[in-house]
Structures are given as structure tokens and as C-alpha cells.
Length: 170
Image (tube, helix red, strand yellow):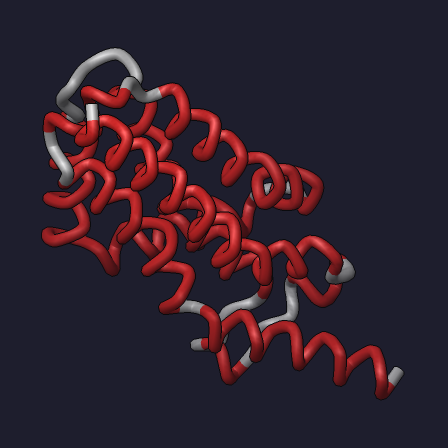
């Protein structure tokens, strides 16, 4: 019984940490369409759209894992994602960027808003036993969410700052 309550606390703690880490990225949804498509030299030349695509695109792998774990104690998607990233991470990032640049901005904004919430719902649907069977499952999600967001906080700040400067100048 104690192990189950520790596990539930771990999932709740993860969800709280993920929500808090994601909250600053929601500001991207407030940018104008022009701001979303303006590259920022201080963010690897990425635009707001590119940053959204990159972060939310990789959330898709986390969502796949959580959805599999909701019905099975193992997630083949977890290993596929890790192997794919190790073998061709830069190529995958370029493919994500190219695909997201083709999306209408309304769809980019929808995914920015909806995909993180879909992931949270999927995480809560996973039976506690499936988290307990392999603690690496929750670790994977932490890497693909909280740790990934932290890697891009400076990019987010640069994009938001450039948009604010543009508004102030205009």
C-alpha cells in the first residue's frame, strides 16, 4: 500500500512540475501571427512557430508512450523514440520544423494549447501498476517534458523578448 501511495505521489508531483514548467511556453500563444513567424537570432534562428513545433512535436512521443501505458505495462513507443532520436535526432528535428512550417497558424496555436493537456490526461489514465512496473516510463516522460522545456527556456525568452521589442518599436 505504501508503494502505491508513493507512486501516486510521484505521478502527481510529475504533473505539477510539468504544468509549472510548461506555463511560460503558453505565452507563445499570445504572439501575433507575424511574431510567431519571425526568426530570432538568439534562439538558433527559430521563430515562435519553430519553437512550438519542436517542443510540442516531441510531446507527441510522450503522448504515444502514455497512451500505450494506459492499456499495457510496456511501451514499445518509448524504445522506438529513444532509438530514433539516438540514430537521427537532428534529422527528426528538421522534419518536425519543416512539417510545422506548413501548418496554418490556427493549427499551431491549437496544438500548443491542446497537446500538453492531452498528455496530462493520458498520464492520469495510466494504471498505477504500469508506472510501478517500470519507473523508466515516468523518467522518459520527465525527459521529454520538464527537462526538454528547461533546455528551451532561453529560446523562449529570446523569442518573447524580440516580439516585445518589435511591439515597442512599432
